[in-house]
Image 1 (cartoon, rainbow, N blue to C red):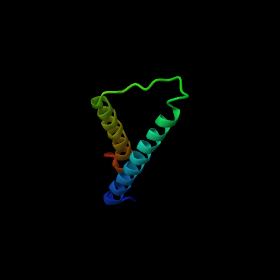
Image 2: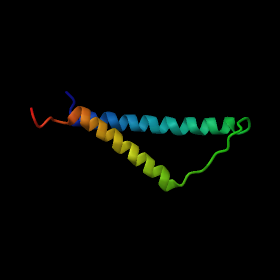
Image 3: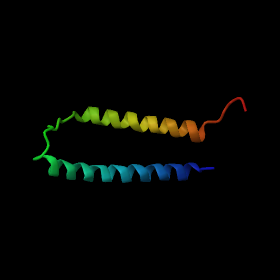
Length: 75
């Protein structure tokens, strides 16, 4: 099936790709829509951002473990 090395490599690559592209898109859209948008940006505390990111990564990891690595003890 999957080797652990391949799984971790794929997860690392996905995190890097989504992290880098997300920052770029967020910066671009924030600068272009500041003048025309009726919404105001609300700054969130850094601790909250980090907590949400860690919780999300933990849930993704739990899902991957459940569907790819969990062995049924009955069989």
